[in-house]
Image 1 (cartoon, rainbow, N blue to C red):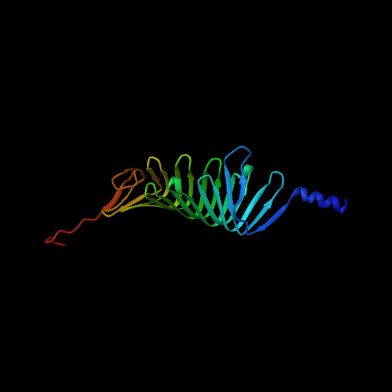
Image 2: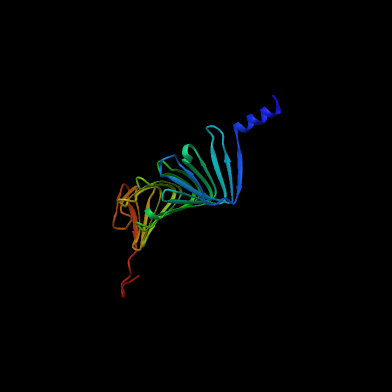
Length: 225
């Protein structure tokens, strides 16, 4: 094959473009549609190959899509209309309109379904309900306002804390479901059960299955030890 034809063939398979310091660039999802992605990064790499199109943002990467802002060390946009967002390194998500923020080491987010999967030291803050959630694995659905968490789950609210291995939280109804040896901790003591469900407060949780706990009381003056 002639060198010119070989070079042309290679160019048709993959094109790599690198931009240094490329802030404020815009992807439009499709002609006539309002959904727009804006992004910035220290470096951008774009791969154009049929069925494998993707854009990689490296260094202080920021992507804004819908009402959500996503920051990370590295962000990869791929799929049809750049639907799939893959993030790694110091991931931070903010959706101020929904009172939602999240930090993690890794994140996969689908723009069409508004579903994200975060892993590794995940911290989710729900300012609308004043709830803080920590776990190693978190799946959030922005359309349905559902959060699922697994592995070393901790949920904190005011003077109330609960830990378990699995949790589901409905941000609209503020209903919490806990399984996997859940333990609730309050100023009055601790309670464990097979299953807990209800509002994330000491009085709002209903506990079923094998229930046990401890209660701390104040010692009255003049009583024997």
